[in-house]
Length: 635
Image (cartoon, rainbow, N blue to C red; front, side, top):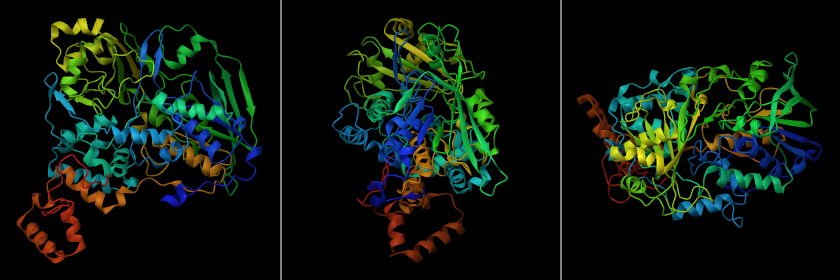
């Protein structure tokens, strides 16, 4: 497997790998990573579809990329996905998958045209004082010291960031700025999370720094992530004849590991599984309350040869997710148990130190949880309060909030968003699905006066309505009769952000592996960032291409961190459009800077610095870069 960039490799179609017809593939987990691996096996490896077997514990595919209407609950979305125009692997695959919205065009083409026609941007990024615009005005509000702390982390090698926390690199100069409000609410970072992952994010998305304040850097699907992304992939695979085995819990994967040989040969030899049928098992698997006891099925074994490829998604960010109801809170139940995804990784990890250390991620659920809720409006009484903040008609069918609206003074650090409506194809006309989440689930609310994790759907809706500015004498009635709210508690949703070191996540294809690979958010591939659709799909592509020696390059992570234009742009944007010459400097420093600029005057370097606003001077259009916008049009 090798990395590539440019059109030459991107447009090529690889030859069929030798001997692929004699191989079978077993994919443990039918989330985005597992589905992507199956798609790459079909499209690029040209493996017969009936040789590909997806073993999925849940009654449907998709994993964390869900969106569902439960008859006993209502509409639910545990989370949402924000896409980047430089998700190179994602768009490489989706150019060949017919879209759900229009099967005559690909997922990529539909998405591209939609976001060209209806571009995303926010008109109100944050509120305070019960629905009033927080007037962050697209500014990061960073001091020179805060900017230098971010720059220091950017330039610190990953080797020095092992097991380090963000707070070891950022002081209050960053943590009390608008920058951190934007960042932590958009990406769900907490102060105690991994400095290494923070560095990767800054490096990976340096080209989008200017688009953070108004979300102009982001793009969204037409419907929820399940219908717009997962359903097209499942249909594509079903048409190819891929074997989906739902309600199937893989208990263990056994390996033969011979470290005494020069090649440290490792071979997957056996898959052990149970079939869990019945509605109680389905409810337990998906976190729906009220299910009865689950009787596990008899254990089965699949014996493997070197021609049987195994792709495992270790861990689970949505393990132990539980749904509440309008009248009942979602249970906080982080206790690990058989069948939660973590047990499988622990059994695998016990067989070789090359298979990672799951305990680094699943041992402190108090530090990796947050709670979301899906609010479905039932009439038009709440809509005026929404429109007053987002300044768009929620029923227009186009962009509404343009990303999350964060409540700056919320004790829960509440954020909410409304994407294009309807979010579900069968959604009742005139209704709106709102996604709400809070980072601090153990803090009492400002209106409800209870921790979010102890609140029913109605109570979470009340807290949200309070921060919308709904008069207090109307809050209870609106939450009860004008909305249905389904809470979802996720104890491990940011487990992958916990401080870690090299080796804590297994490599996609571990050293010496002959017939297996790891996929998803807890596998390790360089440079890319977890908690993105791209990461899941990239690990899948790298796994398939490595094990089958596919003669085509995997698109490398977009190299904006090595593009001087992006670096200059980000430097100016972080300082809210102010040139570097405005930084606090001593007299000697200013004199040296002046002499240095004088020496390069009339060169391309000088012109580049002026063009991107690093030093005073006319820009491409004669003006300084606009705060909050990526300029001049390089993103």
